[in-house]
Length: 615
Image (cartoon, rainbow, N blue to C red; front, side, top):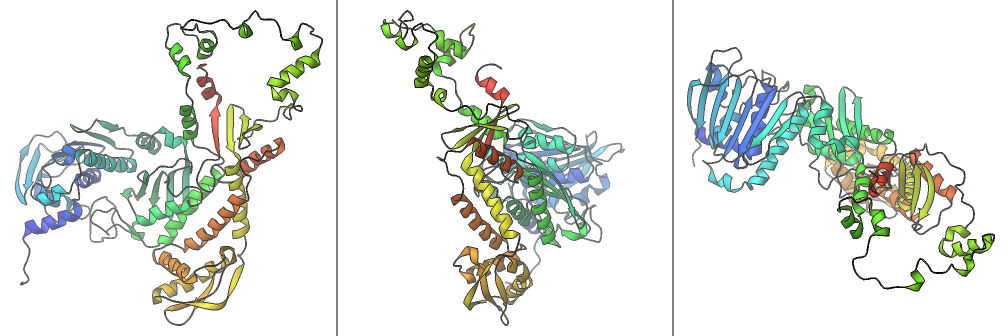
C-alpha cells in the first residue's frame, strides 16, 4: 500500500483516542480549560453518565470572537510559547476541543470580558459552523452531546451510566482539591447536586474527604533541594480497602504517577497491612524545568529529572510526620466499637414507650407480660440466709458470704489503691481482661490495649534500631555467586554497592555484564543470591533505591518480634501493664502492630455515657 496523507477527520479521531478515553476525560479537559481562563466559578452538568450531555460553564475571561475558530483547530493554543518545558498551565497541547468535536457534537459559546456580545461555533464530525451571535452574559459555555456517536465501537466499551458518573465525580473531586479558591458545581439528571464552596485548602479537603479524615491525619510540610511537599497523610490505622483516596498534585496539576504512588506505599511499608491503603492529599511544588508533564496526552503521568530526590522526600516526610504525630489511634476504632454494642431487646422495646425512663430501669422493674408462678426461694419475704442472720457483728461470716460471689473480695488489696496520674495519653492501667487486653483509665475515658500487638510493635522497633543503627553482619559465601546481568543493571548495582554493604550484602563488578556476590545478610539465613540481585537491579532501574533488601531484613525482624512478644493468655502484673503503656507512648508507630492492626482503642467518657442513655 502506498504512503499517503491521512484525512483531517481521521487524524482528529486518532488524536481523540488518546485524549478522549471516556466522558470523564472530556470533563477533565473542559474544566482545565476553564481554570486556565481564570475562572472562579465552574459548573458541570451531565446526563446519561456524560454520554448524552456534558455542559461546562465558567466565568473566566472568555474567548474573542475572532479566535473561536482557532480554538477548535488542532495545535492552536494560547497557553504555550516556544519552550515546551516551561509549562505553567493545565493544558498546552491545543488538542482537546478538536478531538472532542471529532467524536461528538460540540458547541462553544463565549463572551470576552468587557465585550458587547457573545459568539458561538458548532463542531461535529470534523465540520465547523460559525462563528455566529449567541446569548451569554459572561465567560464560556461548552456543550458536548452524543459522545462517540461517530465511532459506535468506542461507545460499546463504555461502562454503565452509574460507573461513568462516578468517574466524572472523581475527576471533579481531584481538580477541586487542587483549586480550593474556585467554586465547583456538579449536577445533572443522573446525579444529585454537589457544590464545593470556595475557601482555603483545609476546608476543601474536609469537604471532599470528610471531617473524619482531618481528625485522622497528620500535617506534612517539608522541603529538600528546592522541592517542597505539603498536605495531609492519614495515620496508619485509618486505611482504606483501595487506593482511590490517594491524591497527588504537582504544581497544582492532579497526577496519578506510579513513582509517587510507590513512594506513598513505601512510607507506610511497615506500619500498614498489605491489603490496606493509606489516604493522603499531597502537593508537590517544583521548578517546572525539573519535571516533564508532556509524557502523555492525558497529562496524568509526569517524569521528574531527579525521581530519587522526590521519592526520598515523600517517604522521609511522611515517616517523620507519623513519628512526630505521637501516639494516635483512628477515631474509627471508637465508632466501630460503639456500633458493636447493642441495646438488649427488652430494653430497646421499653425505650420506645412513652415516658420511658431508661433501659436499666425497665430491665429491673418491667411488668411481666404473662402469668407469674410463686417461687419461695425467690420471694422477697423469704427468711434471711443463715450466714447473714441478723448478727451484724459477725463481719468475717458476711465477708465469707460475699467472697463466694465476688472473688475480688478475697483478693489482696488493690495495687491501684493510690490514684496514679492519668495525664498520660494512654492513662493508668486498671486491669487485664481475659489475659489478653489491658484496660486503662484516662482523664476523659478508657483505653483498651491489645497486649500482644502492642508489645510486638515495641520489640520490632527495638530490633530495627539495633539492625539499622550499625552495619549488619554478613555471611561470607564459600564460593562467590556470579550473576549475569545487562551492562546497565550491573553498573547501577556497582554504584549502589556501598548502601547494600551496610545491609550485609557485599557485591562487586565481575567483568562486563556481571556482578559477584561475596556475602549475604546473615539475618536472612539461606538466600537465593541471583534472585535477590536481579530484584534489586529491577528496583534501581525503576527509580527505587533497592528497598526490597531492607524490606526483607525488616520482615525478618518483624517475625522475630512476633515470636518474642508477650502472648495473649499471659497474666501481667500491674507494673508490667503500666510499663507497656509508657513504652508505647515513647515509641513511634506504636498505634499499630507490624501487620497494620490497631494496638489500642479509645472510648471517651461521653461515648460510655451514651451507651447507658445518659446523653
